[in-house]
Each structure stands twice: as C-alpha cells, then as structure tokens.
Length: 415
Image 1: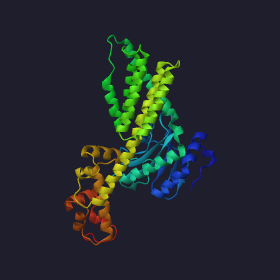
Image 2: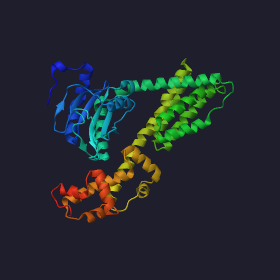
Image 3: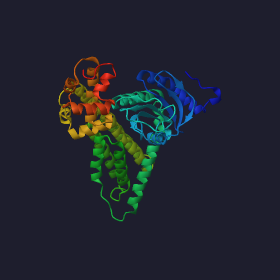
Image 4: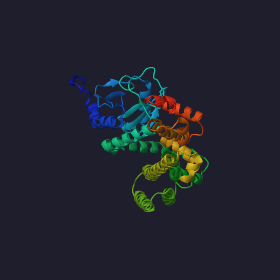
C-alpha cells in the first residue's frame, strides 16, 4: 500500500477530505471489486483504491473533460447515481456536499456492459482497469456510496444549500412582487396555480412546487385584491398550508404527522403576523415551510418506488423463464405500464426490457457453465422465444456468443 510522502502533502482541506473517506473507499473496492477515486472540487484526484487492496494517495490533476463536466453537474445533486461517459463506460458517481457546500465526489468504476467499449485516451490510474458488470450492479455500488457519504459527512454539508435555496426563493418572490406592482390591471388570486402546486406535491417534484409557491406568495402579499387586507392575507396562507397538508396525505404521507406540521405552521404564521417582520421575510419563511411538505412526499416517493421496484425485480426473478411483458409486471404492482416504464428507467437506469434480458442472460450463463443442457434447451428455459434472438441478446450483454462463453470455461460449445 502506497503512503503519501511528506513532500507531496496536500492542503489541510484536501488532506481532511482524503482522510475522511479513504479507508471506507478501500473497503468498498475490496468488497465490490471496483476502482474508487476521490476527486475534490478542483478536479484533482486525491485518493484511489483498487480491488486488490492497492491505494494511491498521490494528488493527480484529471485531464479528461468528462470529469470536469461531471463535477459541475454533481454539485447540483444530493445523491449518487450511475452516469455514462462519452465512450460508453459506466461510473457510480456520488457528490460530497451540495451547491456552495460541494467538496468533491467519489467515483466507482469504470464499468463496461460489453467488450465493445474502448476509450482512445483513458485517464491514467482511473480507466486502466475496466470491470464488466450490469446496470443493476452499478446501481448497487451507487447505493453503497450514498450510505458511506451520509454516514461520514452528515447533514451539515447541506446547510449552505438550504441558505442558497431560500435566497433564490427571495429573489423569485421579489421579481413577482415587482411585476404585480407594475401591473395596471388588478389580478385575481391564481386558483389555477394551486392545482399545479398540488400536482407537484403529489408527484414529489420539489423544484416545481417551490416555483409555484413563490408565484402564489407574490400574489398573496402584493396582488391588489389582497395587499391592503392583512386578515385576508393570513386566511390565504392558512388555506395554502391546509392544501399542502391534504395533498401530502393524499399522496400517502402519515396523516397525524401532516396535521402536526400544519398546526405548528399555522401557529408560527400567526405569531409572525403579530411582529414587525417584513412581509417579504414572512414569505421566505413560508416558502421553506411549504417546501417541507414536498420533502415529505419525496421521502415517501423514494420509499414507495423502492418497495415497488423491489417487488418488480423479485417478480422478474421468479418469472423470467416464461413470456413476460411490461403489462404483466405492471399489473402485479397495480400501476399503468407507461408509469412503471418511466419510473423503472429513471430509478434503475435501463429500460424494463434491457433489465429483463440481463436477468435472463445471467441465468443462462449459469446453465451454460454448470449443466449439460444444450443451447437450444437453455434459451427456452430462460424465457427467450427463439435461439437466434437469444444469441443476439446474449452477445450484446455478455460480449460473446453462448457457445464461445461455454468454450471459455473449457466445455464443448455444442453442449
């Protein structure tokens, strides 16, 4: 294991980042058989670990534009995901911090789903060892990185992000208020925006919900029909809080929890109206309160999607050997095929059919290696309709034909 010599010591901030994550990155490399790389916000690799237990703590500036673009993208994300570089390699990429609190990222990979992926100019020390894997395994590594960062970094990384979010809300509300002041035509309260806000909360779309909240608050405080009536303003706020609470409950959130949130928010609103707080500050506070409802739905949605996808994957494993369609699986989890397809692609990273074929190919590999069944028997046992299609799919996922795969294990291809 390499040690970082004193002459190559990094800045205290970089050393603290490396010391915080290096040991656990090494453990992930050993247990999952992947390369892990710690990259700071300056696009410098601070630490690298590989599946053999080898490590490298020598700082290295990354030259590939992909890593620079990835760093810019990840600073806007909160959780790890699987990304694909322009050459086709997969990486599990996890941000450390968010927005102004972004400190860097951890990369696991590269992975390749076929042997056809080749990088003309691989990044030294990172792309020298490429592991064959499936999208499902890459997502499992991303999940581990999420757990690692949440455990070691804590919620303090997101404090600056929350401040930035409130600042952006303030700007949006100011812009809305300015537009309303300049309007020569009195505007009625935008009831239609409430419907859009309710939809956003039901979908767990926090960004859309926040935008609707800011637009509604601009009207609540400064539209000509309400600005001169403080009691009506407070009534509108209470109505909004109730709407948010009911939308959260309709989406499946705990009713008692939402009622408690709503009661406390209404109490706070009344207290704020009894002080000298500027209305704009009240608006920013309320924007944060209402956004809390979308966070409840986001967490609930993640749980529901996780449970649903687990049920889908279990159903596929139990039924891959028979004819299986998206419609069949959607019926098992009481969803429309269109919605299941969208959620599956977004959460898993590959289309439903691709994932199903990956499962079938993995099962056929086992039969090719450990049984004497013929290839013509194996394709029918793993759910493929004909041998030609089986061979085509197998080659696209495994990188070789079923016969070649069997031969590579020292067995006759015909068997």
